[in-house]
Length: 63
Image (cartoon, rainbow, N blue to C red; front, side, top):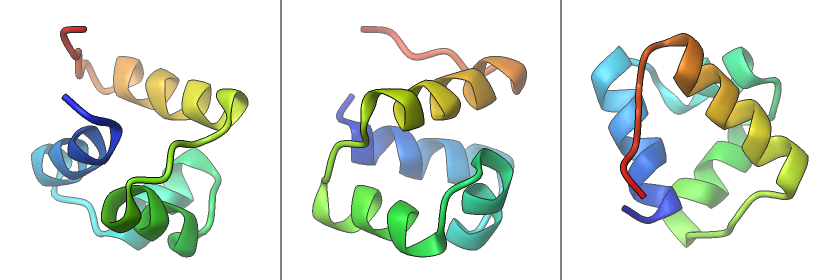
C-alpha cells in the first residue's frame, strides 16, 4: 500500500476529513492534501507521527 493509499484508508476508516486528520497528527491541511493527492512522502519525523496515530487507533498496515 502506498503512502497516499494509507492516508485515504485511515481517513475512510475513521471517518475523518483531511482537516481532521491534519489536526490529530499536528500538520496542516495542505500537508495532508499533498500526501494524498500528489503522493509526496513525508519527512521521517512526520511519518512517525502518522504511524504512531495509526497504532493508537489500532490500524495496522502490512508491509
